[in-house]
Image 1: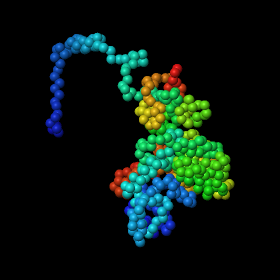
Image 2: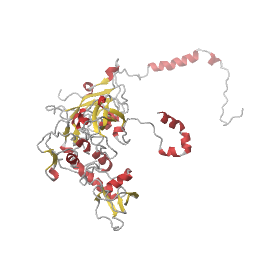
Image 3: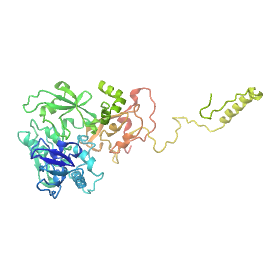
Image 4: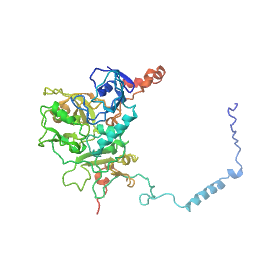
Amino acid sequence: MKVTIDGISVEVEAGTSILNAARVIGGDIVPPAMCYYSKLEGSGGKCRTCLVKVSKGSEKDPRPMPKLVASCRTTVMDGMEVQNITSPEVVEARKGIVEMLLINHPLDCPICDQAGECHLQDLGYEHGLAKTRYEFDRRTFEKTDIGDKIQLHMTRCILCYRCVFVADQITDHRIHGILNRGDHSEISTYIQAAVDNDFSGNVIDVCPVGALTDRTFRFKNRVWFTKPVDAHRDCDHEKCNGKVTLWYKGEDVLRVTARKDVYGEVEEFICNTCRFDKKKTADWVIEGPRKISHQSVISSNHYDTLQPLPVVKTNPLLVEANKEQFDRQTRL
Amino acid sequence: MESLTNRRKLIESKPLNFLERAYLPAILSGLRITGKHFFRKDVTIRYPEQKREFSENFRGQHSLKRDEEGRERCTACGLCALSCPAEAITMIAAERQKGEENLYREEKYAAVYEINMLRCIFCGLCEEACPKEAIYLDGDIVPSNFLRKDFIYGKDKLVEAPLNQ
């Protein structure tokens, strides 16, 4: 099926969502997603950040869709034309959505362990307003203790349900979920029982904000001062293959997470033993430094080799002029 | 040789006349200038006993501020250390325990906060980066010292004195 997103055509299979079709193209035109998670079945459709405009329904029925649609839940049709960043309507709507998400979100980024790798931070930075127009008190909750490995900050939650899907699909049985309805809804374990399950730690990785954070990493360091390194180990657990990212500060492994792709989604879920208990270099086989986008604060002050602009490589005149630099690069 | 620019000046070196050749007149006029300076106002300042008035945007030693209730404002968010071009700031965060609410404003605080004054270039970027208005470069000139280790200022030197004392 042929679908055009912001003027770029792509061939995808029937049944693909617009969001995934955009991800096939990649780049700036991919709508942001706070609740959709490609590894979790049934996720998406809750946060509305991925709204896009369908300016042409399909080849057979070229009428545009009447309202903006959630791209993570809308499947493509043959000949569909979608506008994302080229439509001012979508940009404006997304701004409103970010404002809505931030209404109850506390401004405690200086304290939050997720700061620096938080999707809501990125989203707010890209689309949000500098000031809130909301004049009432923010939603607060009683502190809930959900075990000594995972820290729950209910005030920061944006109710994306990703962690509930993880508990449903990755772990054998679910002990935590969403209580109450609407504005009162909150993530909790019903009997405040500890979330003890071999894969429960993955809720930390899927959480787009700092609502679920690693308690063993709590306040240890800011993520941008740690250095991510890919590593693996032979994990005894049959469902876990032990491929992780270690976050180093000096000699110490401060944190172990699953490897995340460009969309912040984990490549493979890891078990709790790998995540919480193996925090020594001796436990791991190091593969090399993890590539972090140069736009991320995590890569700040980590100097990579000097990369010449792409145009320099194609122009033979410039290649000749920058010969010395290319030589140095290959040496490094 | 032909001059390229027509701006060449020919230097005339005439022999000195009698007055110029005599030693004393030139020496006396030099001494007169020196003597005038004896009666002028001093331009030197006897630092550190005397101090010149600082400009309003002078940046001196850092201080970590407290809020109205005397609690430390710093939450160890690390933005000052991130913005620091000289990498002079390090910190270790800790979680506030029960009963320490009157000491620290937020859930997290800086248990260790160190600035290496030998590295610091007093650019003021930490002050600008701070989201909690906790650090200001409003102090004096950082005093000299004999040992390198004494230039690493910890919280004992940086945090403002508590209120009502």
